Image 1 (cartoon, rainbow, N blue to C red):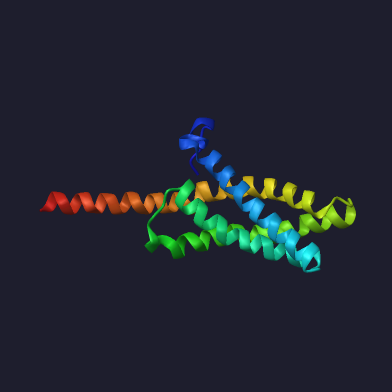
Image 2 (cartoon, rainbow, N blue to C red; image 1 turned 180 degrees about the horizontal axis):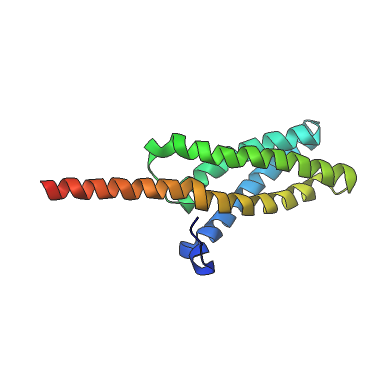
Amino acid sequence: MERITFRQFFKHQAFLKYALTGACVTVFELGLLYWLVDVKGWWYLYASSLSFFGGLVVSFFLRKIIVFKNYDWSALPRQLFFYSIVWLIDIALNAGFMYLMVDFTKTGYILSQIISNIFLGIFGFLFNKLVTFKTIKHYHDLQHHQLLEEIEKS
């Protein structure tokens, strides 16, 4: 596995964009969570899981377009696969974290969700930067190389 320097990690402000899109997704998730718990009367764990799923959909498209500037819709299934792996891990960790924070430490569900989102956001950025969209970048490099070879042949 290739080592990444601190400078490369923040190259092209991807982490800042990731964090900003994460903030937008957090506002969406918290709004949905609040509405489901306080307006609709859902149990906080069900509501948290549903709002987290809604956040997945919103975050995938924001990050695909804004953070990673990927407009290759033919790569969508592969990207969704890897992004969903992160999501599946995140949803389990989120539910466990929420349960521990709310039931054992008596922390409010909104604050617990904010703390959970911070930790899971860092994990998600690293995985998607190093695995999900790195794979796609390699795919685009390969396509570009093949295109150049075709042009040279003509």
